[in-house]
Image (cartoon, rainbow, N blue to C red; front, side, top):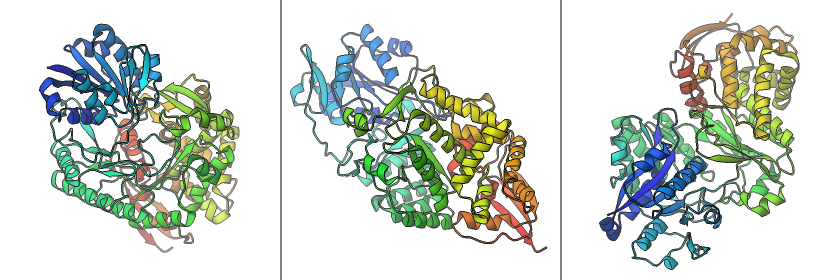
Length: 636
């Protein structure tokens, strides 16, 4: 029997690993071939960034080793393959996955790699093994690159049309791994492949292609397997979940399994943008059973010029407001995603775009992501980069909510930090504005204050957050120290001296993005924070409401060890702000009001708080007591 090993090394997220789905799919498809099943065996799939020397020493005469490459593991894979080839020179080494470029450059650069697989790899993987055992001519295999004498050859590209694959879950590929009780596992599920869109920054695979639906009975069976194996978290990797009517049936299956077995209990998906009513229907179902993480209303940019450059279109503002109201009325959290550094974006257009979302009523959650050059995206081509004068910084892997990976051989990210419309310094300022706005507004530190000033004093959100950043830089001590930390991190990043994550043992061992770090530092020093914010607020309010407003704003911030509380106010703040967040205006009444608050989850230390309230609960409003109050209102 010829021994086959697969390497899909992943990161530890908190206390869980993902089962190596891509490698599992390759193994299940190859071993479904009677000839390969007769002559080969899958000896092991390596799913974590384990010690390379130990892993190689435990291999038994490897015939074929396949490496699944993503941004988070390709450097680990290169080191692994180099050492492997040194010890086992006759072993066939194959690289595939998202991080493999569409050309032959990896073969020319790394002499220890024998073959490349481009794109979705099940068929090529199987046929390549058949070639190596003498059962297939290599000239007949599409979507690969290989060496032919002294030169490297890229085979023709072929569109894959297969709509069904053997499941690694149902065929037993993961049985040995799942027996490992040291860590709980999370799972990936794929119900279809393909994407009809063509966003230039994306390398999802098969962009602009028809979507191939996998058999529904197989999807259900995989979910049953996950439930039976107590999988808590499932990540659906469909490009557009909710695009099809049958996606609601899949959501119903998840609900059924949770009600029956309590697993899976959490689901993350990328929702379709072109079927909002079906997506809403799915979210209502999942939210009603505590499974969903909230509804995505992704925009990427509010600039029409940017959207044209990246090959994307957005819903209009009226539709966006309609969707927000629908979700607010249903009590479902929404979050909107933007990207920093897209071609055509300026500092001002980005800042105004963020604040336009607030003006439209998105007070729940906005996430901004760094634009990253991915090897198989249209944006990474030389022509595109030259046209928009794209500048990048190569940095160690930017993985949030993992243990610090700076010293771990994993991967590198190529982050866009400059274009012909945004300089590196402007990129830093865009990030500062975004990080503080997310921490202050969407995580809630100044949300009530800014809404009050917008409604009662006409102060636009863009002006409020520009002013508060100027105030922090010029007239604060505590907040200025946080500002300096953020600015220094970003400046060091563009000089390639450090990464973009924050880690502090007070908040546990894992890394946090800068906006979450800002919030955590302010919450940890909440009295200092509101002492300085009160000085700022006095600039705007001269009607005696400052102390009451600050009291309310401060009291609704969830903190560890305070899981229930009761507060009384001279104003009916809850009705006022609930209406505002729902897109309505109700005058603020001076009515004696008492609120009894209960936290979404109970935490008693900063480590648990950082994980369960900030990481797990950010998009579900766990940072604010006001999202879950009981109230007593009496006239005065």
